[in-house]
Every structure is written in C-alpha cells, then in structure tokens.
Image: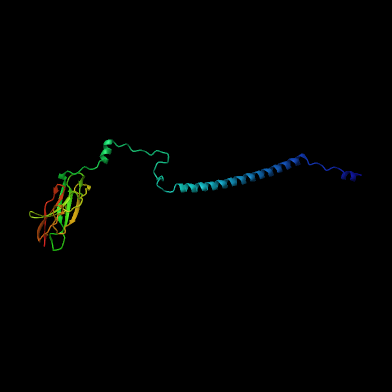
Length: 228
C-alpha cells in the first residue's frame, strides 16, 4: 500500500529559489540578445555613415579642384572680407595713371648715320635715324612715318626725300626714357625723287652725298658718304 501511495503522489513543484534562478538566466539571455541586436544595428549604421563620408569626401575633392575661382593659399575664406589696403589719395591715383607728356623739342635729339662710308656700284646705302630723349624724364615722342624724313643732298642739289613718294604717313607715339634711343632704318635704292613723286629722268652720279634725318621740325647734323 505504501508503494501505491508513493507512485500516485503528484510531483513536487520547483521551489521559489529555482524560479528565481530561471528568471535570472532568462533575463541574461534576453539581455545578451538585445546587446547583440544593438551591436549589429550600430555596426550597420557606422557602415552607412562611412559610405556617406566617402561620398562626401569625393564630392569635396571635385569641388576644390584648382580653377579660376579657386581660393588660393593666403586668400580670405569664402564669405570673409579680405583686408583692404588704404585708399590712395586722388592726387596719387592721378599721378600713377597719368600718361607721360610729350617731349619738348629741346629734349629730343636726332642723329643720322650710314652703314658705310663708301658704296660700290649697285650697293644700296642703309640710312639710320636715331631719336634720343636727352631730357631728365620719360616722355612721349611721335616717331611715326608721318614725322620721319630721310633726305639725300649733294651740295645744294636735293637728290632724294623719303616723303616724296610716301603714300600715307602714320603717327606712332612712343614713351622714351631719359638717354634711351629709338632707331629707324631706310634702304636707299640710289634713285632720285621729286615732290609729289614726279618722274625724274636722271639718277645720281658717283660722288659725295649727304644724309640728313628729320623728325617733325627737328633735323640732324649731316653725315656724308661716297657713291662709286
């Protein structure tokens, strides 16, 4: 009978301590699962942020490629006013931008030279006009063909002038510094000329000739040469 009573007895329920241990274990498992989920989500977010950062970096590099409007080292950042230099006085500005004045005739020297003292038959003399600023300051000189004239004479006989057959002279103003020269060359073909480019029958014979360079109203000293 004792054995039958024992086999029919209901199983004992776990104690309260066992329930507490089970709840603690279950809580730990849930916590571990949550930690894993959080770690996974955090890793995914970081990966997405990394991709966004890389894209942003590439875009920034393209935007800062050197170009006309690129900011250079030392320049003020965009949106920041760069330091401004003190404003120049009106007098200083006018002085800096004013063009040099025309040279006074007394400050312009004109000289005449040839490339040889004597020329054999058929050789064309090369005539050179040299214009010098003899003043103390830079100034403008009209050295255009409208002002230049190369003149050949023999005694009182006017042999040639470059102005006789010139079609249309032009003005050319040049700023010449003190003691600086401008030169112009002209190859004379050993032919006579006449005002208005009229036809001339005779040509120069062998002998001594003089060359004078003229710029406007300023004439050089005569230089002589021989035609053989």
